Length: 232
Image (cartoon, rainbow, N blue to C red):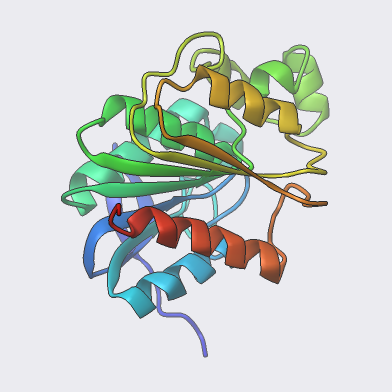
């Protein structure tokens, strides 16, 4: 069955496509990775979980990606963070559970820093904070690897791992043992930089970067579900 067209909202003249499921809070907010979108396997599995639980969930495509018009090459981390923040402010109310995949994990951390009163929990799936720094020696190397120069320069201005990250909510980091794009070492660095006392790193045996195998997605959904359960 063909999916219905997404809704859109405006951010500084950019039309951002999104899908919002109404339901109980906290609202799940899925943030895709670089060159990914809101229709990926993980996003759809989490949306199905939200439907089963009667939870609110928001998915969106950054400008120039997925169903959002615009030039992907002109996209920057700052631009996409602005769009994600606008989605939080305009489309949601109450507490949020942020779920960021790869680059989306980097954006989720910035949202948690900028909206600490809204973020109840955060899940990073192969989170890739600062990948413009540790992934590429310079802008020329980034361009050779297919990363837009503007994105690389924007990322350099939004680095996080060089200081304490003052996010205090519960955080779960899910990372593949065999991730060749975001080394497991980055997850350990992130865990050490976070100030929250409730941080867990869940390592998936033989897992790669995408973590999209059925058992890996099931593990992600179980992690989110556990965060939503009341403490005992």
